[in-house]
Amino acid sequence: MTQGRIEWLSPADPPEAFPDVSRALTEPDGLLAAGGDLSPERLLAAYARGIFPWFEAGQPILWWSPDPRCVLRPDRLHVARRLRRQLRNSPTELRFNTAFGDVIRACAGKRRSQQGTWITDDMIAAYEHLHREGWAHSIETWDGGELTGGLYGLGIGRVFFGESMFSGRPNTSKMALLGLTRHMQSAGIELLDCQVASPHLFTLGAEYMPRRDFSAFLAAACDPPERHAAWTAKPVPVCSLFVA
Image (cartoon, rainbow, N blue to C red; front, side, top):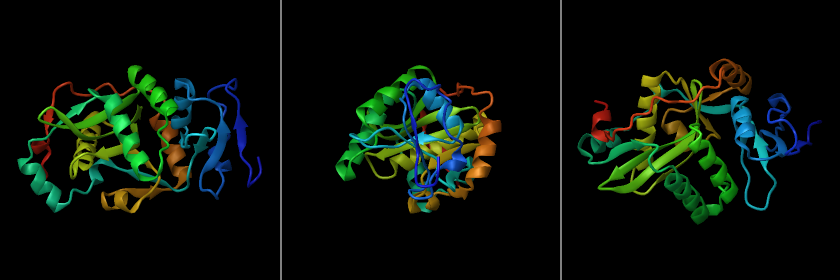
């Protein structure tokens, strides 16, 4: 592949048959390959190499590895003073992996109401499959039996690969993110991959990591490619996450 062209994958290609991420385009940033499929094996092989799918309905599957990468270390999450006050007396509780399908569909619905979505029906089916196999997880906020916010992503080894989040009420996605980082700290999960940078993520403590460093980190942190299994089955009051 030369600069300005990408490699096309066939569904018949081995799941790990991705070009090296160093061959990704600079414009658009990180576009690496197209085609293939969304099988669990190919998705897991992609994430462990720092590659993720991102495409809209009607497009081929597009695979990306931007440089630099946006990441968040769990101990560096910034909790704003206003959110701290809200946490102190909030009746909201966190739950893990109890409504994965509802979370991913809420994320897709939010994007559709804004500017279209990359969370297509095929993507939903693929990630629900990964959830059933113990790779994909949802972190949810609940209030009085109502799902009010959350996020979802993949857990492989010592990395959580965040995909999308939604807020049905003010700050609920931030509460879910705080719950995720607390879980990561207790479970020895060292890095949250935020994929694509945004000003909002940087206000929460995200930072850039050069792709070369990110790839080297994944090579160690995702080998072996173990599932995250330490999720609590009990609801967690968000007030217990209050940071003084």
